[in-house]
Length: 423
Image 1 (tube, helix red, strand yellow):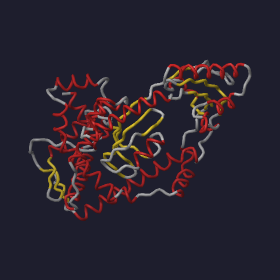
Image 2: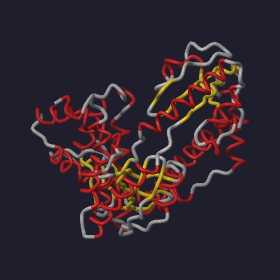
Image 3: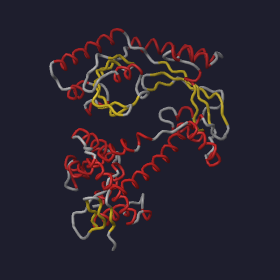
């Protein structure tokens, strides 16, 4: 049963919910009109104790405290008539399933172990549906009563920085890497073909076809396997053209064809929450023609020859990189920790041995041509406030969040009857 123990632990981490034992062997606590069984405490204790990640840090007293808090929140939600819709439960189920599947080398490995335990994916979902429903309700209540009221001011961030700056690790030695990146543009012929395909799909939708099925059938995006599902995202996570169109849609509305650097999209918004939207899309890529690619190959060769003849790297980067109208020095320079260069995806192998002033050969990565140059180093030093402002906000927010939750739980204890049964 080691697999089930692992799954239970993963689900506990993923949904913050406790498992319930089947047998009745005594009452550990009473919360409102709910009871907590001693067996619930023991089952959770044994499950978490078996995990190497938690080990001896877990006690029965802590388990009981967490179960009491969970019951308090559920009791409050029932009193306030807060519920979870089938759609919300299903969405959270899918999110939890992704977290579980990610623990396995491949999806096939996951299915094989499930089969060995006599379970199916749907069976696993059904087993934990009630716990996930409670978690959805819990999250909605916490958002309404606690999280929506938390704000982090500039003063709080700066005060935390100044008070704790001696405890922050130094910024490591960094290397500055400049790049020239030239991507072939999509030709008018391939664009016209992609537009025709997306308009044909749009016509099928207008006749009543299912968006998800069409995404699975036609979309060139890896999300096609999930019916085009992109999950929740906020502004700044997608390319501007896609983002502008998506955030202008109402729930259930499908966009007109949207052109981005990837091709043409049809976008449907499925949900909105707190500055985020959940969307699906169908992508028809506009393939790059051989003639388009040949033009770019000639251009990158010319640029490389200029560099070898002594041309200024930054001037070439700003003049030739794609898209030229958005390029400045900040865009073409990145900094990386020197001791982590080899681990940088795709480019680490090529830049890790560059000496200061050296540049690479022409590299082709994902249909884009690159030349990288080591333009210098910066020595270890303390982080400035601006460099870690985002992390400071998270730290302060988490501290305020935990304090607010504790205070709110104390308020609930004064509203809702709680009695711990002595051993």
